[in-house]
Length: 357
Image (cartoon, rainbow, N blue to C red; front, side, top):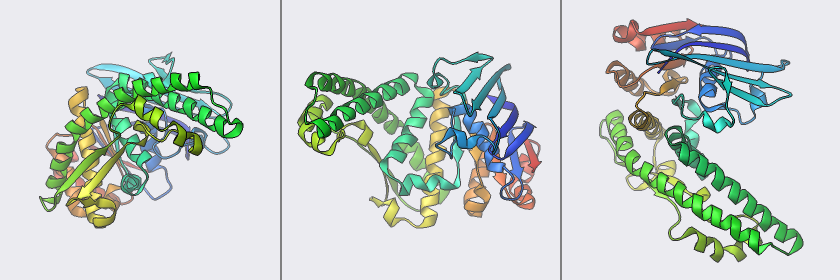
């Protein structure tokens, strides 16, 4: 898979731009010129949403009525065009070779992408929902059934929560409907949990290997998947009275977490800033490795501001991985042309294209 050309119209602060790409692509310019927004446009064409903004309409350029993104991809010699258009007064429209999807979720996984960005630290400092999202993004790109079951599970939890909140208002609950949604939660929750466990089993060793490679075997790190134990339907019934009081579903895979440890202690509180950065880098490289092995194509790798946020040693190790051919197409942003040229070096020069913004 190779992104040959990208057309951007009214996306964030970009009025109109068109780019033709190489294997390694560097966007260089001052802060605020739109470097990160170009990476986000590439990400948007993969996930139908921004990596940074939760509100889609924030991605439409100021005082404009729409944005449009068009990506021209090469899949083993066959060109495929993916387009995304969002109007302020309409729905988001994603097209694949001029055909619209019935559901946006059908698109997920067609263009695998891994983003490494400065705000990745939220995976360590943020709540469990951030880490669940990290897991879900990886599995969903290579497993359509998982994504559909996760959507169905979340819908069932939402409906059960509505019944629980209605009890708080009216002191009555429809027990028949409650059981129906609990059975749905248990059915799809068991499937989601099974897939997450399988993913974790495959993911933890490569992640540890990448950490050892980057840190030069300096510390021992580990991952732990935290989830419920037992039959979910029984647990939901056991927690009914408690859930009526609090007004939400207190047990299930929507409470899962991924625990990060350094020498058996939480990385959040017991690791230095440098150790945390190395851990996050290893986490994202393991994400790339997992998708590459399970999808038979190398994801696009987006590296936002890494020269500025990581030290020379860590960046050098990333670039060494680029040189040995482990990655496919790569997009990098930076503020200093001289630094980019120095870091890329002679080994990657012929495969690199630099865009001065």
